Length: 102
Image (tube, rainbow, N blue to C red; front, side, top):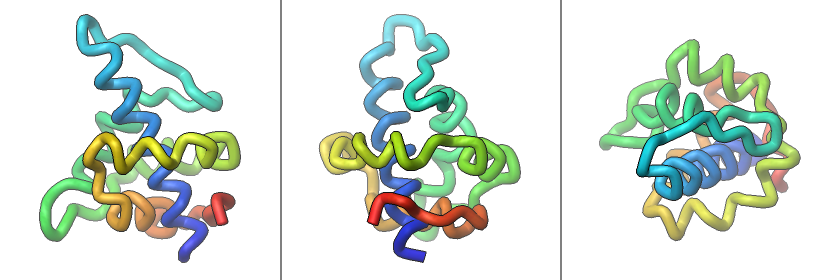
């Protein structure tokens, strides 16, 4: 479960960072072979709210396909973007994916 939590953090960190840096016209941005715009669009509700919604099927499909090992390099950005890291770290586990960040 802890492994899953790191994966989500990384994904959300990169998604939020790239979304914020491309506000003039959000384009498809691929990081670690992952479409960060889609991750943001499909998974945001799984980290927002109290309690957050369960990740959607679309979100889990993206998590399953993501290169989480690569995304682990970016997990430190989540804190700077105001993403609730604890909630973000729960997404991969909820989607049946192991977390390679630990």
